[in-house]
Length: 341
Image (cartoon, rainbow, N blue to C red; front, side, top):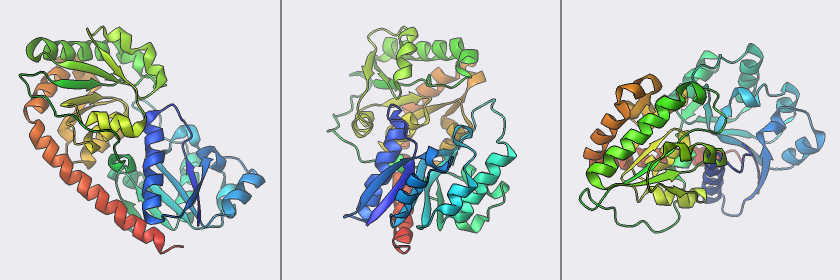
């Protein structure tokens, strides 16, 4: 069996790469002998007869997961969509709209609607994307909310025993410096809030602070945190997720820094630069784990970090239940996929 997997092609973004690995890991669980052919999402934008022919020689097309419904990738080509012949499955995709960004243009929305109408199965990663598709004219009954595939990416490496407060906490930090145009406006507020939070835990608990790199562009910003003894962690996605399981708290901006943390059962705080950050928190039933950018000046990050650390056993238990729910959703979705081929 052959599957054409159409996905974001960025090899440097740990989140994008982790999603691809997770989807393919899950497809191989359902189809152990499968051969997966990779295609960039840009294949949907411009007619290329050779690429369309390669896709049409497979048994199944899987699109996603991740932020496929994003202005950067749109609009999709109506001619390409019409030319696709194997059954099409939309797998754990999301809608991206950064804070301050305008809504999608009509042409882009229409191309998304045409694509999902073509699909035999539509699985999205959270309810916000479902509502977006419904507003665009797609029937709610055909949309399954399955969760983010990267949440259940298998971890690599052996977790260490987590230290208690007296022995010193382990706290991971992540910034979004990979192209988000709004960073400049909030730069000093973000850096100051991260720095003060790290210093509080270092001074009170002897915390070990790690910078969790998700994109090479972050090398230009994390030195400006000026946090003493800051260690940088930059591993392959599965190993990075495994490392997260050793931490007591992750404070992240890149969405998949907190997706992987929660999937590793580590308490996390989500600094929202994008609507999807808020909606991930809602999806896992923890809207209180979001810090809005205007609240950084009010020391919200430092206060919330203290609250979460004090309740980390509660959040670990909650994430166990969320992980079980997502695993069940994805298993059922894979069973539906099997019926197509």
